[in-house]
Image 1 (cartoon, rainbow, N blue to C red):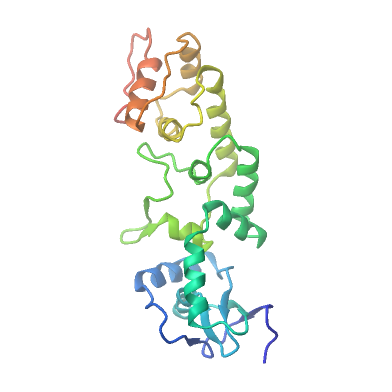
Image 2: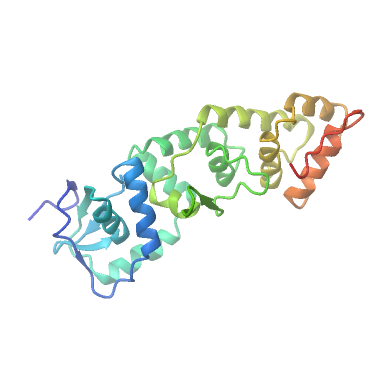
Length: 257
């Protein structure tokens, strides 16, 4: 019998069993995890099994490891059965994004360590916006982690699941900090500089080649009070365009780019 409460690694996945009554696995979830293993290597998050090698937490990870012909990490916890499976599932749903970040960062997963450093340095920004900024997700429509992410021709991933599974990779963290610094430059002119809808709108602007942020700050500095709270990203984009084009002969379209 292996020692309990210790992390093991194995490439022999034949000895693991399913707990009777556990919810059926999601094939698409398994497929996506298997692709992640093939592209990024062994999943760092251990599965949890009981003393009979029945999987208490991590059946999708186990099936994906089998599919990808990968090794897996596991922890043995005595006395865990179906009731504990249900409790674990319930408690995991109550975890916040910050809980998942700290958990994986504590495990040494590089992207989450960098994200935690970014969050600690930029505590004026909310967690969801920090994730979007660090992913260099300069979407003009939304920075929400709840969006779908398409990779390749037929693979649509849910960013929530990617983040919670520990397979989120982030992006260019130096670029993320430069973009955060730009957001802070708006603070002297607008108290709502860290409102999520404004951050999302500004992130969208950063992806537009014609948008010169230095020019925007200059125009903002001579239009005191012009930037006000808006109810949507679209309204912010209209307002930013109006401020940006103030007294300009050649108007720049920033709304629909």
